[in-house]
Image (cartoon, rainbow, N blue to C red; front, side, top):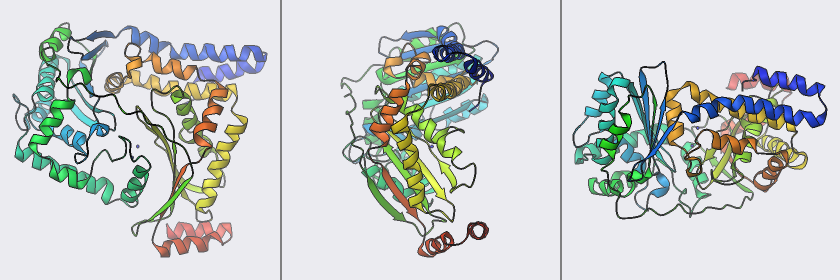
Length: 478
């Protein structure tokens, strides 16, 4: 399961100090609007087109480059897998690099490499995306290769076996051979049992091993369809690009079966406490998780800002708490945001003098303060500015920008850059306080990650030592 302070915001803060309170909000809003202008300007350059078969196309020409980035996202992920076929979305992603009707075997990778192209893909709960960057003069060839593998993949028994082995090796390396990961993942997934998000994206070993060429072909025919695809091309776009897209993808037919909308998911936050012991664990750690909301929920923007305020920004509350006399060695947070659900998470590694209970209490106090007191207009403006800065960085990377555009929600199909920003901009201090009360103060999942008994015993002893001595011994132990 993975802030720069702009000069104009500093100027805004200085101006705010000299203005009456009634003018402060307007000054902040004006600064944020000015900062967001590049999003609106870039969005106006996008050419939107929908093919007759439902495929969504976005073209964004950029001057000063001889490269073009192509991103294709399909609304198929692990949530679409049926019982006995977990991991199929990820396994099929691997298969699409291993041959198509007109480019068998490793032809795709060899052709891309010969052009110095960069390419990759990823699978998540809700989607699978593919992306590449190639010289502009090779775009027509690139579109032909993309269409051939998406529409006419060539699966053989041998390639299926090879990619099964590859995925199982990936599972062993990233999950099974890492301390705590397998047990922690299984514990957390039990919290989503009965929903489409109740199993790991990588699937189970048994289901991966039992996959067949026929079952994978059926998965492709059901889920790889033009009306489930968003295609974005960013960079030095040749004049005939739209014609090439129509030629390569326009005759692709949708299957007769209509895809079902994703199941509506709703969680009740309540206290859950578990622990896992791993003999490979180097030191205790604490994993906390809160059920929040999906990407289309009206509270999603406020939740995103609150996550940043609590755990993610360099100036977040958790980071500030560790600036002097820290009680944690490490904090790490990568919230999961899916279409129908969200999970805020935090991993904390304590100092020798600090118990896991103490770390959990510290986080609870941070949340309760926001739930009871809220945050100021100035703090919220800074959170919005931080969010906007990250968004603006996309404009400096054609590849990341292409991927972001192809990941647009339906509600943002014509406003892929400004739609999300408008929702962030509209968040108010009372709304931020309300989401703290609704999703963070009603209980959370706590999982204690524990090493072997002798490491736990050593840490317990160190907790009773004077601070200076415990710090010295901690350095020796770790």
